Image 1 (cartoon, rainbow, N blue to C red):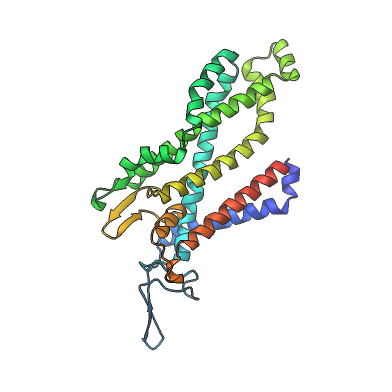
Image 2 (tube, rainbow, N blue to C red; image 1 turned 90 degrees about the vertical axis):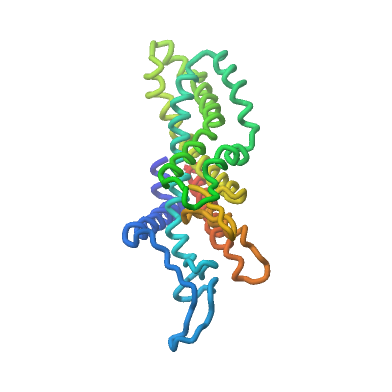
Length: 300
């Protein structure tokens, strides 16, 4: 697997793009304190007024600005670490917690797993977006901008909800995968020769699970991203939504939140009002390269 990935140029293209954008995003936070330039009006060299925000793309603002004058390119750079970071943290946390739950249960008898499956199967038919909306709305929708809790509290709470929502289905999947491995002849021989559950897991099951877990990680990554997009379209932006007189707005520059925010402002009267296309194209590219990355892992 490693040898195949090392020789795969498409794999390294995906990794290089991810690392490069993360470096730019964290660099903006470190060296510019996360600042995004805000330009309300554009003037000629002689001081003549040319245009007001939202401004068209130009050599100074590569993607133009939104109605508030924020540079869309800088917003995308600043928000990239939030989008990728959240999806990676949720996907990795789901995997670790599901392994802690699934592995001991997989070694239990079939009756225990049958009862557990009956209990957890009900969660699989629930739409995660609506469940997340019900759980997050009361805590992350603020009608008064002066009473917004600290960012760490809001982020940690939403991360916890997003992680817990994915545990039932992923735990059931890992239990099924582990039990399938336990039914193989080499595992029956290892048990017959007196191998302890920990020994069998460490020496036999874990090496077989690692390739599967890499694919599962990317699947959970994409699922989390889609869940964030659905929530933003329903008016719940990541880390909180503030309701103002002119409408709702996000509290941080995160891609899915930007898409939901600009989508609510959509108007077909002018190209300048299609600002939601910027985060939309960015999110589409993230999904495309994530699927491409996953396909190369499956191939390896």
